[in-house]
Amino acid sequence: MPAPSTAPWRSWSPGIRVVVRRVLDGVPPDAPPPHHTDVVGDLLAVDDAGVLIRTRRHGDVHVPAAAIRLTKVVPPAQPRRPAP
Image (cartoon, rainbow, N blue to C red; front, top):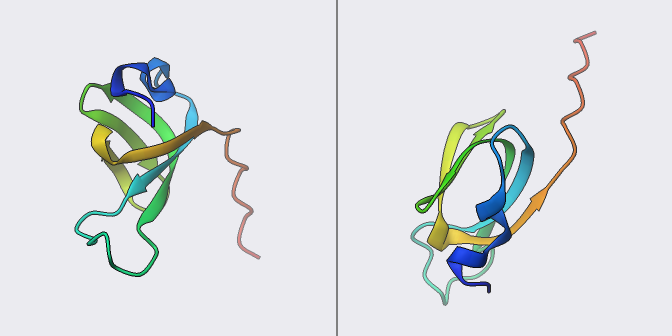
């Protein structure tokens, strides 16, 4: 895992759409999987404490730097289809 100061997400700018794989809170290491979850949405902020992402389902989610395992910039979300 890269050092926190060299992690790719540290150079992100707000406004892009990202996915961040994070360690789940409070899961003991010897617990059965899953131990991680993904947070997908629009990046609102990046700082030493981690990232803030606005998701469709859960609103604004702060992911602490220590919990980040994998990151990726993803394409913009497709528009939602209208209800039939």
